[in-house]
Length: 117
Image (cartoon, rainbow, N blue to C red; front, side, top):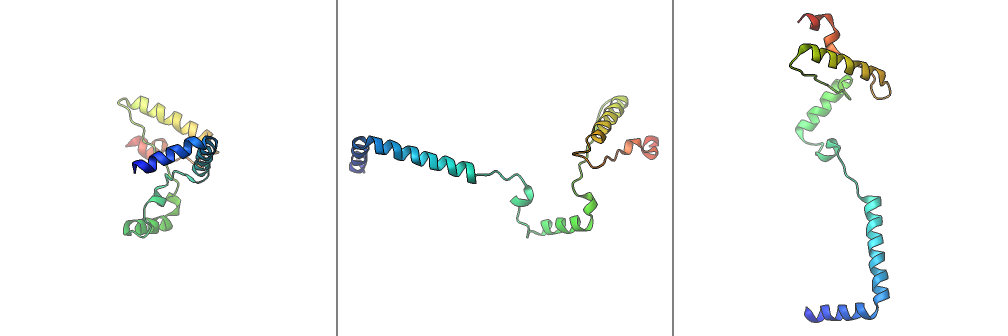
């Protein structure tokens, strides 16, 4: 092993320009592969095997209730009910103004039933 390393070192020193160009070429190739092929998948649907029983049940649920897809639930909490109400109203107003990202807003605290209970 020592003889092999000595030989490689000797060849590298003797052909230093070629060694440097080869190293830069390999580094460039590695960078190209990194940029074009490496990806981070954060979609949990792609991470978990779709044939698992609970994934199949969830798929059936999504097909049965498509209106529940792409739903975001936001809970506003506060020790003071007045602060909670004002924050919720401000949030509803902001979400309603952003029609590009939100198709609709359901705010139960604005309904008479929830105001009374």
